Image 1 (tube, rainbow, N blue to C red):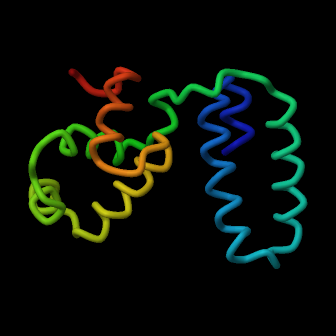
Image 2 (image 1 turned 90 degrees about the vertical axis):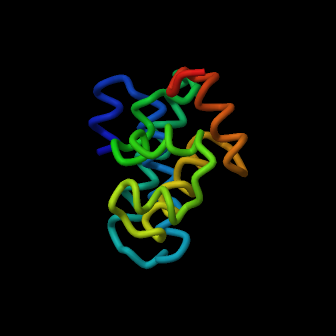
Amino acid sequence: MIRVHLALADITGARTLMQEIEEILHHRPDLGTLVGEAEALRSRLGEDRGSSALGASALTAAELRLLPMLCTHLTVQEIATELFLSPHTIKSQMKSIYRKLEATNRHQAITRARELELIDR
């Protein structure tokens, strides 16, 4: 998938996927040839000096659906009920959104998403 993002000149999307791969390799460093492939992709990403600004493509469709719900005063449980998902799924998606938007809490994520015009003001 990183190669696809690079082919589409979506450096942000490629970097986001690379972060996810690095997190997996941190927990499972014994994945054989995948470690070498990850190194090669990391090297290729290091060569590309594209924009580091986050684009909508870095968020998954599920995360983009959740993003407007973060602007409400609904609890995680209430959001889960609205979206017919488990609270665990919502928390997981929120954590991913925070990481991708470089936010540490809901307010920062909303502010960053508005700056990037991912959601309306």
